View 1 (cartoon, rainbow, N blue to C red):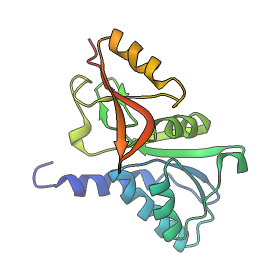
View 2: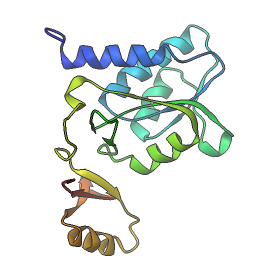
View 3: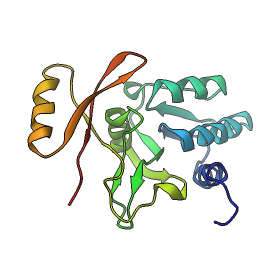
View 4: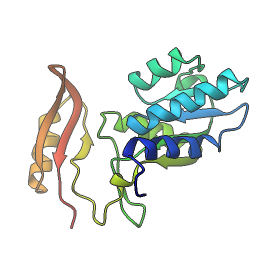
Length: 179
């Protein structure tokens, strides 16, 4: 990539993925720093007259989308998602990936499972030879999360309950090195 910065790569990835969006689509919109640029692209399409609606995987994506005039809908308000576009935390040459580091793992999985097609976007720093340099997100219900943490420990992980602004996520972040 030479002189191309990480931010330029993110913008280019977002623009390339947005080229797959067609009028009248219901779009699944992920979360993360690359998706930030995607949401701007979707906002531009909406402003240009595209009739789109988005199912977002996080409050932050929803807030940005709403500020750009992108119509939002809840999963129960649609029977399909035409295309989901989301970022990844790590991805290897075989397309195995780690997702959910932003705290939206369950929502991301639900939205992607309903989509006819899924596109993952990223900058080149996300491409790795071997997964495991990024903490593996494991989402657990608050109910008995300690049991999930205990099991992760038995598997060789180091479970840590994730906090954001002094509040606990209903997600355990565990570092599990894949062999």
